[in-house]
Length: 404
Image (cartoon, rainbow, N blue to C red):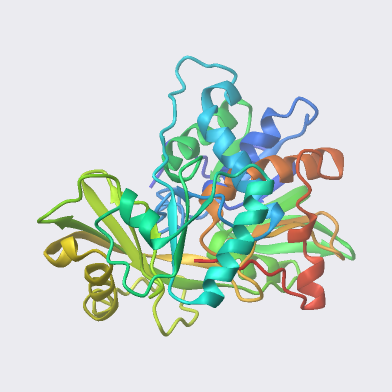
């Protein structure tokens, strides 16, 4: 089946940059690179499933937050918010480009013990120093602004309504693809099955069709399949697919105000989703799964999510699931942080992998950073080197205390 905007065979035998994976991260890189006036090369994006069915991009909850514990992750999301709020400007004021919604209901982290409270307090100090609007709130302060919560056992909350909440990431994705193509990027429906390597460089990619395409740089943007792609180049990555569940529900007694994306101590999260509500959680038993394993575990709703939701918000005792889905995190088993940059031994193999659920909100900064790395040989706007491959080689986790 032919997909609009995708070729079925490459128009050239050689490209300066071949991006493996054309979803949110790959398309961000393609657009930023093609939009950089200092980059004059050719770009091919190879996507195995142009319908993006079941991709992490399609299954996202599309949220953005500043509430991280490390400077680089906070700054990554701050640029993401800037990009979303000024999207048309970044698209060179094209009148056809729409404004992008950023709904600032914020995240509300709830702590039910002092150890977690101390982490939130420490994180808030760093976030505040970097310009984020995070507030530490006492239970009384939370109750005054959000009286629907049951705050029994809650020590404090951490909340931020500045550039934090839901954003329409699908509009970014759509326009990145459109504008990348206008800039000369070629999107190919195909699957990379081998990567040629000569010593410290990759030389080409082989498609399932048998085509061999020479490449000056190969970018691994293949989501949960990152480790398979890397292995073709002789590189080991600690990235695996893990299932994550999302439920949309209707409430018989809806709230009279927006529900922040609430991180309950149980591990369940919930938020406003238009006239409905969205919630989810990781499973208690969380193994790697096959790439095509999207089996739904309905017991998670009955056993974990509904009890937690109804406990935290008694008004949600009477709710009805209207939709649900399962997607895959590209889960970095070392530290649940992105792996970005060049490989230390294969210099023209560039990675943008292992986002562990943060890929949508981090995609603008990743596209910009990888574009700079390829064009200039280093980062110029924001130093992403703390997320580089060195820590993978050394088995030295880059700890982020605010992973959901």
